[in-house]
Image 1: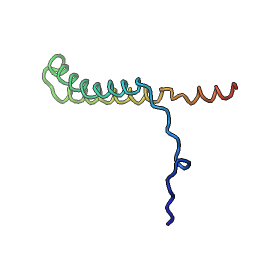
Image 2: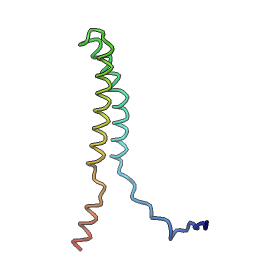
Image 3: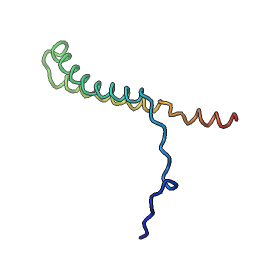
Length: 92
C-alpha cells in the first residue's frame, strides 16, 4: 500500500472560523441541558405533583429532550454562509 505524502497542495484549505455566536449558543444549550431538567424535577415534584418522583422524573426527561430538539433545530437553521457566497459569485 502506497502512502500519500501530506503536502500543502494536497490538504484542503482551512475553512473560516465560526462566529462567536456559535460558541455562545453551544454554551447556552449546554447549561440549559444541565440545569432545566434538574430544576424541572425539583420544582414540579414539590409544587405540583405532591412528592411523586416518577412523574417529575418523566417530565424532567421530556424537558431534556425538548432542549436537545431545540438545539438541533437551531443548528439546522443556522446560516453557514455558503448561499451568500454562491449568490455573490453568481452576481459577478
